[in-house]
Length: 258
Image (cartoon, rainbow, N blue to C red; front, side):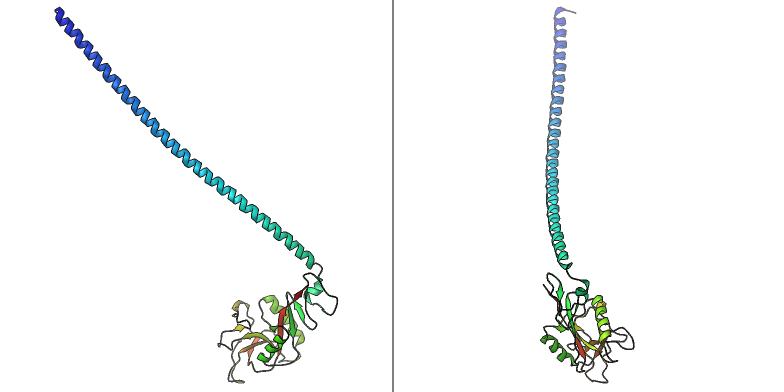
């Protein structure tokens, strides 16, 4: 090989090596750039996740704080109610069981929350009951009750019905000696209303067997008022009857306290 050829060959090899080295550098630079971009994307994602986690933690912490605050408020209210109830029960403890069941107003006065009724009235729960001795029509009986600051009785519980059953059973003197109560369907047949115009709760009705029957043989207008009484040794259930028939009655008003 001549000297000039040798120089050319060396130059060619050198150029080839420089080209290969340049390509290797470009590839390395490209790989480095891709790695940096991947790291930046990962860092951004991590930052977003951390921010989202911080928001969730804040909201949970706030909800926990609010729950604890509400719980404390409820505890304070419950404690206040408990103390108030304890105070009321303490006042009621001064009432004897005899006063609560069947008071005698003519005797010593009561104080605090003890319920009291006037003379000739029977006390039960928070109400006073008057069992009349004179016989009047239903409307007249209601007027008589109002004149006493009361109204014809409304029966709102089984316990009240049982109390009245016992009292009526004690006070009846004959087969037909019954008592008007504050129930009528005079406004609309079959729609029984109490004296305050509230409808009769069918789950708290105490009609006798086959009642009400709106019997018209005695009065063509039928039977639009309710009475209770003891017949043939049955419990004192309810019977419908002509409102114009004179009967005894039961008045009711709220018992006094203090």
